[in-house]
Image (cartoon, rainbow, N blue to C red; front, top):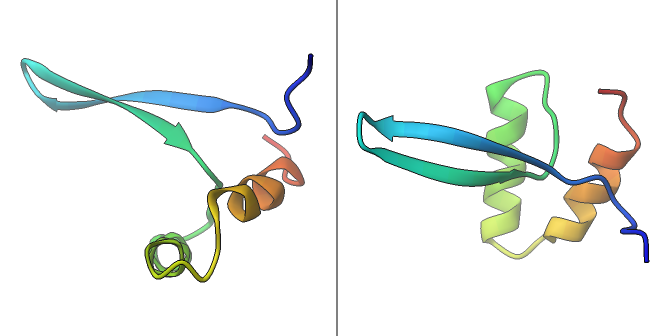
Amino acid sequence: MFDKYRHVYLINKVTDSSFSLCKVLNKYESDEAAMDDLKKLLAKKITETDLLKKFDDKEI
């Protein structure tokens, strides 16, 4: 019925003729914090759901 977490997407222009659709997992105050979570995500130390939980608690 209702999704548990908010869903935020963006369109990223890669080149003049290429675009990618991206799902936002969290909001960060610095690129270092975002990179840290990306490394944890790729190393399977955290999940997308973990990041969405943190994102859901933040104000937009």
